[in-house]
Amino acid sequence: ILPLVWGTLFLTFFACLFALPVGFTIAIYLSEYAGRTVREIISVSMELLGMIPSIVYGYFAITMITPFLRNFFPDIQAFNVLSASIAMSIMILPLCISLAYDALRSAPEELRLASYAIGADKLFTAIRILIPAKITEILSIALLVITRAAGETMVATIAAGQVPQITISPLNPAQTIASFIANTVSGEIPHGSPEFYTVYAAGAMLMVIVLIFTILRLLLSEYFYRGLSGK
Image 1 (tube, rainbow, N blue to C red):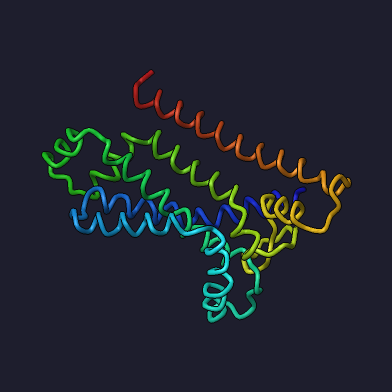
Image 2: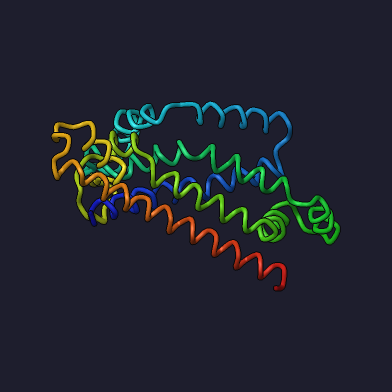
């Protein structure tokens, strides 16, 4: 089970390494800089990305992303973690942008006006005023995106490969818990065999991982809430 846990965390790490910074940056731009027309265009684009089935992202990874990456990494495998994580990050990007934008826009307008009154620009206001004021929501969004990536099935099944191994190179294939469950249930393993029931152990481990992230979100939210409220 350890190679599956490693594959899940490894793929999730690289997916969120792109999705979280880009998502929060776009959310700041939409909240503080973009005009109404630009916001509507980007919002519609994000909605369209969110409507695309995950299986399409999987095939996009192996048909478009992997050949492109081969120009820079000739040794990249046909099925690899890097391509799958890039496709997964694009897939979860609309969720991150939408939630982060709503969190920033829900900040009291008085905070912006007070910051502008002392000469601060929009970037300083967003990073040093608004984000700290909404830090509990920001953390919740980040951990929600992480758990969403950890539970993704189709992209990992199609693009990451089906090789349960512990690797430190994103150019190699790996297998996640979710893809293992999908392959086992839909494969040729007889129903009721000991091998078939391993999916329950894998599913329990995935639930434990998601539960850990959820508890971590609650603890961090409580910590920052007490820090900001002075309790």
